[in-house]
Image (cartoon, rainbow, N blue to C red; front, side):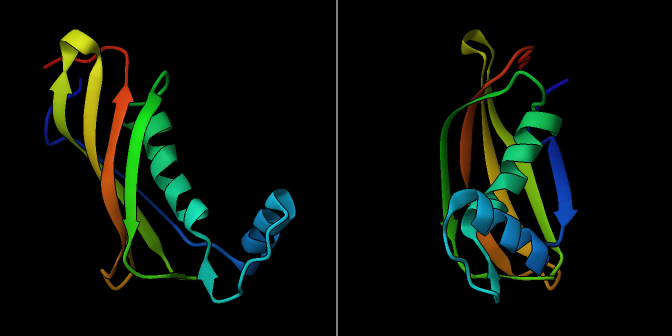
Length: 120
């Protein structure tokens, strides 16, 4: 059941191989020191689509501000938290963030999603 304050988190580190795969898929050159922002944002997308709200979730809006680079090989923890439920419109507002293993804020922002089974 969804409720305001409910959270989900995910931890992961990205390797040089992950960056090479990303570069091959996108055709973009990537540095060797930091994880590309789209890979960091993908952690949040994974949380929304798989854990909270979960399967059937559709993105409507996302805002992320990056505050620091995510070092390659460093443990990253992404977290989403429900901040508002609008059951009449099946909308869920969430706060999102990603921090490194030292607690340094990598990015923070908000997401608005359309989800099934929204209960207030």
